Length: 264
Image (cartoon, rainbow, N blue to C red; front, top):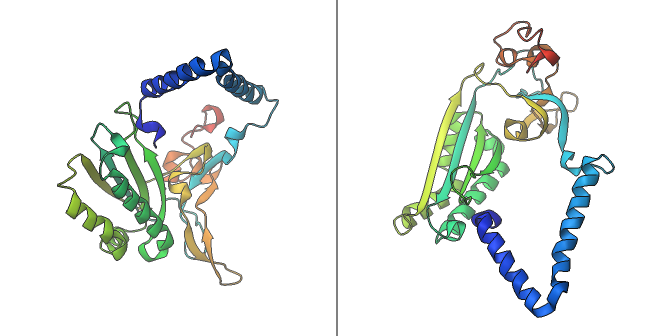
């Protein structure tokens, strides 16, 4: 986040000043570290691209077509996709200040947001919390001074229960006490209650993220013990092959037949 708090022009200028000072002190030898770094990085990328070395960028990638489907309490995924309501909750904060993430109050408030997410993960079952993915917004300004959490819940009631719990009150109290002294701080949230049959997910050769990061508590059918279940399932066949099928709006998921590789 500190890296993204400054523009590329600022970082290049800082690097130029440091390199210039080193050159004045050490002469041409000061160029060697930068040159060696560029050579090593080029060799690293080139040998992976050529297939001579393991491509570490594929680590953690699920090399197939998958979807996220929520299992029931017994760990069964059922035959009908998207058979549960879900709640998508977006919450974020942004610094409208020339210092960006270094602005007064931003560190404290963003720290409270991180703590809230940790509390949610530790009390997931209590609030019907499924999972979260964190993001930096790089689309609107040259520096990334906005962070956002995309959270998934089973019910709106669970989300509201957390909002009024002691785990959330600390951030709530901090904001009420400090926001007038820090008008550059922005906070927002959006809530979407998605009925069953009105959502679908597809991931092809992707890292586990978004709803696929969810963890659902269920019972082991043989032992009766609690276990945490992943929603990631094979989407290369059956109803999960197509978007309509994944929303339980197709009986055969054959609407993509004729497309190369069956479409997605």
